[in-house]
Amino acid sequence: MSTDNRSLPTDLSADPSTPPNSAPNGRSNTPDKRRKKRSGISSRRQFLGQAGGATAAVLAVSAIGLEPLTGSRRSSVQAVEISPFTGDPGDRADDAKAIRKAAADAEKANFGQPSHQTNGDEELYANRIGNFHKTLPHNSIGEVDPAAYNQFLAALATGTFDAIENVPRHPGGTGELANPLGGLAFNMEGPDSPAVTTPAAFLPPPIASHKMAAQAVEVYWQAYLRDVPFTDYNTNPVVQQACTDLTRFGADYLGPKVGGVVTPQVLFRFDFPGATVGPMVSQFLYRTFFYDGIEVIPRMRARQPVINWNLDGTFVFDPAGRDFLTAFSEWLNHQNGVALGNANVFDATPRFIRSVRDVGHLAGSDTIQTAYYRAALTGLGAADLGNPYNNSTRQGGFATFGLGHLNNLIGSVHKGERHTWYHKWFVHRYPRPDAFGGLVDNRLQGRANYPLHADLLNSPVLPLIQAYNQHLNQVRFGSNEASFLLPMELPGGSPNHPAAPAGHAVTAGACVTILKAWFREDTVINNPVQPNRDGTALVPFTGAQLTVGGELNKLAHNLSLGRDMSGVHWRVADDLNGLFQGEAVAIRLLQEAKATYPEPNATFTLTKFDGTTITI
Image 1 (tube, rainbow, N blue to C red):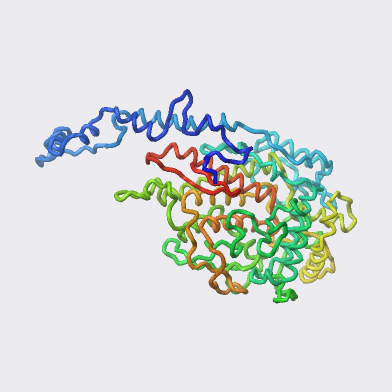
Image 2: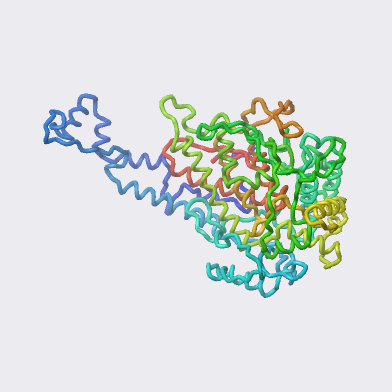
């Protein structure tokens, strides 16, 4: 395993000749160097510290005066600041400035502001069918008004609040664009918003490509299998049908395989270390934890299922279950930014996560970093070997290398969302899966002849989706419409910002990287569990050994691919791209932060998503 702390993906790697701890003109700002410089400062505190006990006491008395010790009413005690830099406070300020400047200089020298590659669809299609344009005016089949889209592009190029405020919207629409300016905010730690690139393997697949067909077929299968209990995956024949369908896409399906074949054990997962072992859901989402002394048992308010599956793969529709955007008129309203007014439909029984629907609901219910704070609260075992307090018998960490420090680091990676927003709005403008489902429906219903791949149009999942949508349209609208639209789990459909990369994925990649840097990844999970078939209880898991590192990788999976399971994101440019970008942001943040720590020999070691190990 590599231990090179710069073993980032090629397009994210730093120049080893300019480490973040080095200031310009050769000035070093490492903690050890700063300690050596301060050792020459002559101050009263240092002199007292070097003097013997009795001598120091006499000198201290003379320094503050005898009157406080003799009890005179005229006496007063003056507080004495004691620190390594009291004798020369300017020295500390200079160091702080130098550290910040060194970090900025290293970012500029090693990364600068890179150019970003796109998939070319925006230039290829005059009707912009390969791009995001929700809330803008559309025609009767959901194609954006060209003049409105051009004004939208001009507003982004201007980059001002007023220009974006004046982007046209569909008459009657009330939808708001979600924070286009968020990607232009500057970051004062870690990389700047445009300074992380998309790995070439994870560029948004063009809409006509075989790779796009593969990820589209996956989200359709996720929608159709939303309610199959995880306990049934090895026996349900429809799950096996999904595996067979995805296997035929070969290398263009970027999900894990066993011997080149998608199996029920690896279906809908990531091929990260430990992420295909054991249950799909991370152990940290099944553990009871305490929040401010309140015991939290992680049964969730689950959504009502649409299908009640039997063990043999047969099923009956649940009369109360609902998915959304299954009728074309509702889909078109959503693209136009017209409020849908749909209500959530929840199960009356709290459940442990036991299905794709539950994972999607979890990923739609979190608040940025909450799942990662939650994981830390459950207890992740031993600290990383590089924690300088591991071998101390006299000191413990808090503001540095303790709980306060960890919470601060997890909180800091919210800045990764700015990278997400820059790529969403100013680079890719990639369509959401629900918008792409409209292209599929338009093509199969004969409204348009879009160049979608035949392996998508001929997938066995589409007739199943057609019948699924027809049922929902009957119970919701009294209509017999049978569509090929992507059924959406969330009543409001997808958010009003472009798809790639996924904000959940960037945050997951960054937060999980921080946790892997903080804790021993090889720690074995004791007493692992999995849900029973209906999610009303947890039962022991007795299979392969589970580790902290593997379960953290699953946590990243659950909070990123979980969004695909609701129908709002894609595997490639949204999830994989986002996870690797978030990982890169966190690594660069830790590289910068290391220069600020006073503890000696502090390091962070972690295993990246690609399986390589680095030490910072």
